[in-house]
Length: 407
Image 1 (cartoon, rainbow, N blue to C red):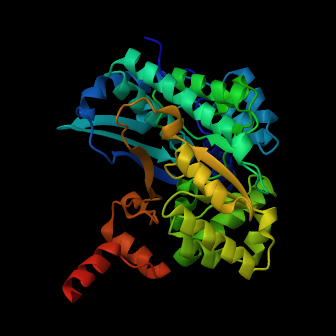
Image 2 (image 1 turned 180 degrees about the horizontal axis):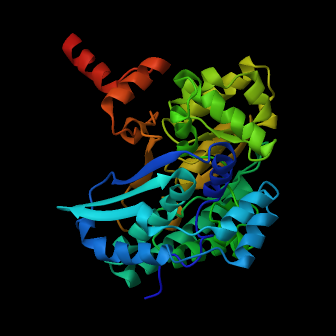
């Protein structure tokens, strides 16, 4: 069978932007990434191991083609030395291992971060597509096309109901949990052709190139988490990461991710300097309405006109939630909406929540303390407790226990 990944452009743009920043700033960093499935599955993912092994072999045989390098190099924020690095780059199979323990599928990538950080999106797309191949494809595609047509109709209706100050802007963020690569292409092409007034781009670099769309993305949690292990004082890891980003991109790619240790701790570091330099903020956990109000209040305290800034919402959105958020905020600030699973895997099937996250850097644990407790990630409880202490973040489990005892 044709491998699932046939082009190294078939990944999120922010993998390339973070990759370039780490290559220039911290090329010596060693890192470990671990695959986790957060939700129940219809069958044990361990059953996919032989197919996963085959797909990883195929992935590690790929190289960037000249036309692919030319496309990446055409993006104004990509530098020529990074393109030269990609020209000689090839994934090494020795740096990624997959195995089964009982019903559990394990996948771990370990090695130089500028090598292994690229595995994440490909691995997630591979596992997701292999998983959904076990279901009735004909029924899934029929239902997927019905739902796709409904979404497009809903967006077209927006033309008569939206009269807000800033336009509705929708992006595809669906590479990692898509039903399949072919289905993502069909979905993105349909939105681009039929709703171009609102559909403004995709995180998938391959589809952006092929369909002449804007590639969308800046940074993910792994970039900020890495700075927890790069020798700066732990309390200063966010400001160090943001400062390096500013120096790397000089005004480009100006949307900052806010929830590596929660929105409140982020805003404590997001002072006048950063608030003026960054174009806006991205939401990825917690109540999006409360988050948006906090962001607006922060800009107000700093006497920054929010009409010159942007909020990007990307946490488990569907179109209904995106439109609700748009009506709440679009008169006060520019808004963008990145929809993933519910755009590229809305087939009437129960989806699975899979991630492949940075767990260690330079031999030290790193963590994400999400504003949604179920999304907090760390393999070292002692380190997680220390990180909470440093940033004054209460432990929700301890809070719940304390409340129960008090009652």
